[in-house]
Image (spheres, rainbow, N blue to C red):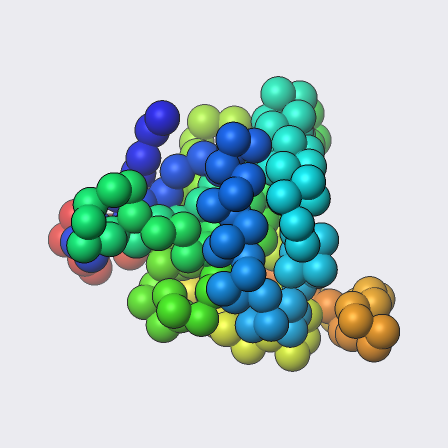
Length: 198
């Protein structure tokens, strides 16, 4: 399996696959309340069967070229492959139309380290450069300040608010729409690399 380094701290981005359902469920159990404040994933992956079904749905999307899911692992002292602490995904991909919707989640132990931003850059680079995606969207709860901050760091533009457009845990929430277009993405990444001297 491939692994993409996410920086000098040893974190890696790897595909999340159905055979990892137990590890995925353990990760979700560690972060369930934190993750569930803003996204429904925590209420979907609740037992071994639902964990496997969720990952299988993304294996099916990958096979159909309509979505992808990747985990973020941080190193363990034992060196046995690390700990799954979050992930990024393309919830949808429409390659013929050049659009995709990206998203993320993270357990509390990994917050504040830039992991989601770094991982999102990897998958957006791939989508734009390898798959020809022209528009990447980021839909986020208006109350989810950390995810909105990621959209900003990725150079996305806020396009609007879908008022009370989704229900989570019995309450209606506003959803913000952010996006970046391929020419904007390429320009911002070139500028970032020049600043960082890479």
